[in-house]
Image (cartoon, rainbow, N blue to C red; front, side, top):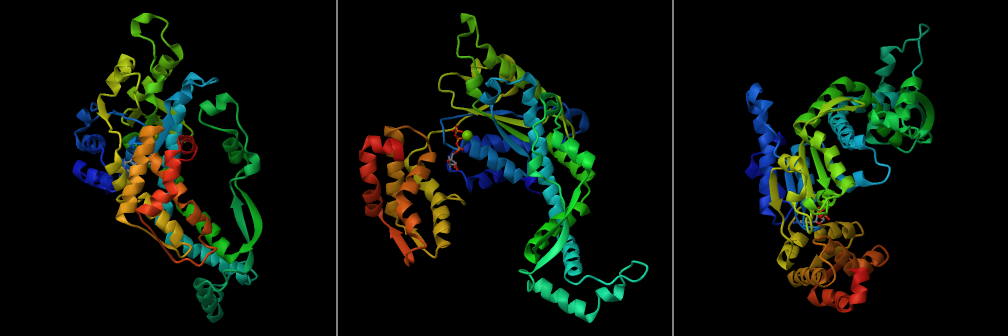
Amino acid sequence: MPAELTPQEIVVELDCYIIGQREAKRTVAIALRNRWRRQQAPPDIQEEILPSNIILIGPTGVGKTEIARRLARLAGAPFIKVEATKFTEVGYVGRDVESMIRDLADRSISMVREEHESRVQERAKGLAQERIMDALMPPLPTPDGKIPEEKRSSATHTKLRQKLQNGDFDEREIEIEVSTDHSPMLQVFGPMGLEEMGMNLQDLLGNLSGRRRKKRRIKVREARRLLTKEEAQKLIDMDTVTREALNRVEESGIVFIDEIDKIVSRMQKNQGGADVSREGVQRDLLPIVEGATVTTKHGMVRTDHILFIASGAFHVAKPSDLIPEMQGRFPIRVELHSLNEEDFYRILTQPRNALLKQYQALLLAEGVSLTFTDNAVRAIAKTAARVNAEVENIGARRLHTIMTTLLDDLLFDAGSTGVAAVELDASAVNARLSEIVENRDLSQFIL
Ligand SMILES: Nc1ncnc2c1ncn2[C@@H]1O[C@H](COP(=O)(O)OP(=O)(O)OP(=O)(O)O)[C@@H](O)[C@H]1O
Ligand SMILES: [Mg+2]
């Protein structure tokens, strides 16, 4: 089970995706492991142990969100990211902060449902296969309406089934009956009251009318996909899924609250007239962070042991400007460092999903093998660092804009020309980028 990774192992995993930021990785690894440790503790103390909520402090684009997201993924934990500023918007209603827990519950449900469905995948495939068989070669019912077993296992059937399995009929059209549970025409936005209770009209209507069944003519290939999905849904027990999903939210959910520094009142504490709406948001968030029970359409969710990771640049405000109760609920603070040329060099090449690997994969789809000399990668990293320093520091996000600019022609031409291999060296990189970098107006727009 991935949830049983030790802090050291968690950091090793995070290292596969995030360069540097060692302290932040260590901190989130400890917080994650502490939850598992809590679950091992005797019940009476278990309830007392509070989650180690964290504030990640650092400039934009240095990996704050990425670390939290990766952490959740490797823990198999339901994860949601919200912008704290969202709750300061006009028309916002105090109770709406609970919506993040409802969204988290939705995520958890689909996560657990997918896991359950993948466990019954083979059986579902078999059942789908039989339904397609019936559509291809409708069995003749006996007078009492039953389908004789020997028909299903006759020699013709066996041959047909084999061909079907081989994909020989994939392009053939058949008529099947599928349930249409999502009708986009029915996108109704319910009144606030319902939404707050975590319900919407769609669900209510869906429950009233039940699942609709509809005959459709589709290709066997498509039918296999639809019917497997449908059979898998029938095979799993949604009550079990729901119970497991809600439990998972409560025991291992992670809520990432971005831009927490933007809901800090900018005024000095004793200056009077504190920024009511910002502080108001903190007050609204507080009960959820402290531990409340939120009603979702799937059932009640206790937030006591959900892990909250807040994040912000804190250029102007400081964590100590948060209301005291909030500070107490986020006892762990960790700073992320801004990224330099050497970091960019590593980010371009080392992570499992490194940017260069991504572009290589894209171009390989066109049969083009793209390589970079070491000096080319150095030149890209150098350019990124320079534009960050001269225009605006947007961290590793700068690499994306630079790479798209650098590879623009190649990405446009690939597929049309017969080029099979491209190697970029430092001079090719500089030829493409230096003019833009030198010209500040240009780089502001392009890079
Ligand atoms: N240290 C790093 N190692 C590898 N990739 C990184 C690193 N920092 C950032 N990135 C990449 O840069 C992009 C932006 O990073 P991320 O979303 O984590 O920024 P952030 O710190 O949350 O910024 P913001 O404060 O603007 O939300 C992501 O695609 C991420 O993969
Ligand atoms: Mg972010």
